[in-house]
Length: 396
Image (cartoon, rainbow, N blue to C red; front, side, top):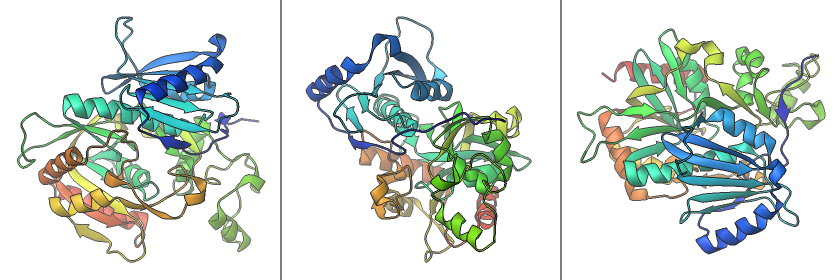
């Protein structure tokens, strides 16, 4: 019988965090935590995140494996020093799971949590701090695809359909996937506005760290996900947390995958993940690392807002600055799932946040392209996809 390469972490979403720890406190915490990092279990690997070297040191084999597969390796040069450091130690007694960040040292410390998603997002945030400060590069928590040579970046809170829409776009004959979580846009020095300028979008990851629940609407993904390294996929029917699926099964509208003889369910828990090589989905020809920004799409999900609103730069900045969203599994503590919150710029990864700089970046990008706000709560996947395609075609 085939087995899924699945690791179940004790913490299945982000641990409680502090993002402004002083250098002195971080050094004290590191001295304590690293005392439990035995030399024979110490794992270290340097990631190249858009040219920024971030070093991982820890004792979680699961986290280390995901880290190595997800990033491009830093150049094998012993004289190259890291720009940022991630330490992750499990097995520290008498301490709850916690994540700490020190801007002064550009260093993160994860204590007693093996959940990869938070380590990944903070690594991106640490690279973003260097890229924004020194290289005039905008870091966006968003998905990107290309259709007929035109690029679209989808910026939205977790759970509104970024990955779903990227999947729809890249499956088109002329479509390509760039990434589903994070992109970089470099701004030329001295550029005052974005009119008459086309920005290039890059993504830093080798893999897609995707929610496996996408398989529910994209059943063609199942055999592909079966071959991936996975995190927190439900392996027993009694552990299912998908109440909507329960109700449909009780009504006879569908059959539980476990009752059909399958040994795991990819959509039984909303934050189960897979580390998916992009080329596994439809081949290397459907993958791009670079795209031109022609369309910026903002997503929301509610039952009352219009299906589409075309935005100018001021309107887009207003929506992004407020960043209103519903907390879903993986994007906050479990007790807050389903409640409303605000995440300015829809970016929980920004460890060092400069609102003035974010506004400058986004304003230029909106000025250079079309921008629309779509509501995935009042229309289906196909209707939202059709709107994106129509706007892309009109972006010349």
